[in-house]
Length: 122
Image (tube, rainbow, N blue to C red; front, side, top):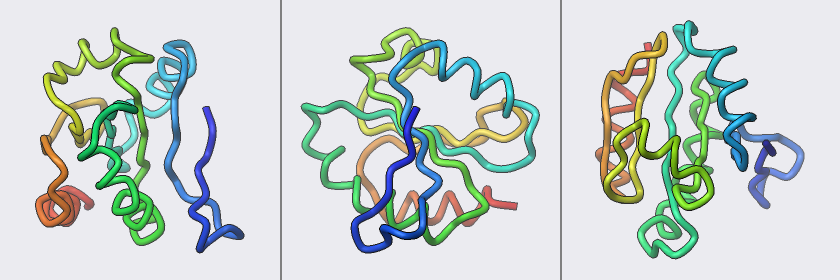
């Protein structure tokens, strides 16, 4: 697990958590699944053009919405996690509160993401 830091904000770490192992993801999930804090799970893939397009937007949101946890999962690295969340296309953004999926956005749609974040934040 690593924190990503946008170049423009090198001094201020973002809240994007990138998971490269199922164990790290499960530990994070078990620790945070009862939280009332919104978690946005960003399912992506290295070969996905729209995923690369939306990446700077997610970094921007992580800086703007510090009360939200953003988790990034590559579907090729963690296939079992993607299957568990029924991810059929990338990018997919799953919105979770108290361990329950409360919303989902499929595709690189900045406006829709920002709208759903606004609806689910509090």
